[in-house]
Image (tube, rainbow, N blue to C red; front, side, top):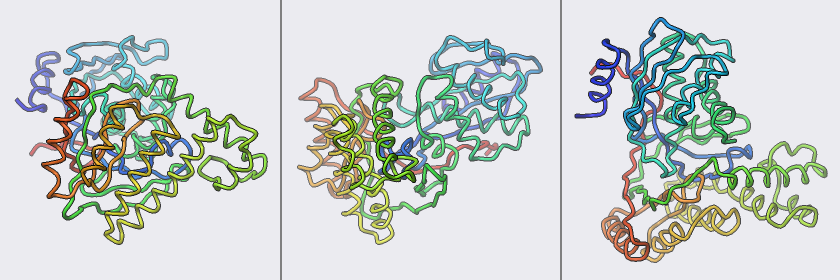
Amino acid sequence: MDMKNRIAEKFRTLFGTDGQFFASAGRINLIGEHTDYNGGYVFPGAIDKGIMAEIKVNGTAKVHAFSLDYDEYVEFGLKEEDKPAQSWACYIFGVCRETLKRGGKVEGFDVVFAGDVPLGAGLSSSAALESTMAYALNYIFSNGIDKFELAKIGQSTEHNYCGVKCGIMDQFASVFGKAGQLIRLNCKTLEYKYFPFNPQGYKLVLIDSCVKHELASSAYNKRRASCENAAAAIRKNHPEVEFLSDAKRVWLDEVRAEIPEEDFLRAEYVIGEVQRVLDVCDALERGDYETVGEMMYQTHFGLSRLYEVSCEELDFLNKLARKMDVTGSRVMGGGFGGCTINLVKDELYDGFVQAAVARFTEKFGHAPKVYDVVISDGARLLLDE
């Protein structure tokens, strides 16, 4: 039974009626990692794996929510003190609260949801859930909130109810994603541009290390603090620097003696990564996928050595990709586990995937997972087909 039918069956069993279906997507990010909260550029796209939910207003002041994946039912009210204990339910509660804070209407509703975004793989299952719920509540309560604000509702949910000071990229990609398009987003101005992504002769494949990462970990927030510290130091000499992405590399050198070496290295990575996103966009417009791939390798080096968010498993996969002439490879997502994203020529694809699975399993004692990537649509109402 497919996911939609499983959701519908459970919804009828629990609530004795039918609702409307909504969905949103997880995301990949071709390049531009840890630049979003630094006001820089990112280059994501929505994928064909995400969250699907059936939802209907219930005429009460309570939300009745069931997660098929956790096989768990939760009820909660809509006041601040009603925050549920279950972490998955906090995402739904947070979206309700953030919608109310913006003057939107939210009343009690019933919801059953499920997803096929691999958890812990760096594909933003949480953003997919937030975007599905934000879009659905906006639709069923006719709030008229624009898409930018829907993305911000998801981001604020992370900040205020889930303990993660994330940037805007994941939610933006989930809301604005289009099939066959990547989005270059300026996270400072929220200006964006779609770039067609249909690489002829290449495939995108994710190799999942199956090492679980936790974005809520103190390590993530500590790196953000390092970047803010470096930006503050630069700002003393260059008041126009609002975010680290505004800084020039030579301006960072000016303050090297004033900040911890760790903060310097974090900032060095970010400033370089902002430029790499622009270089990749230029290369795509020329159809130059070799340059795209080389930029991906440079990003991995920076994430591993300067930002220090890689791990042994991901470094192993990256080095193997380089040895096997894979065009581009890097850790994707927040780091501390998850996937590498790989740009592979068609004729090398089967050999690379087979070698990656076999050699990784031999070294680490468990097999990685392999996900083909299809760039897909973001948040939407699912109409009957």
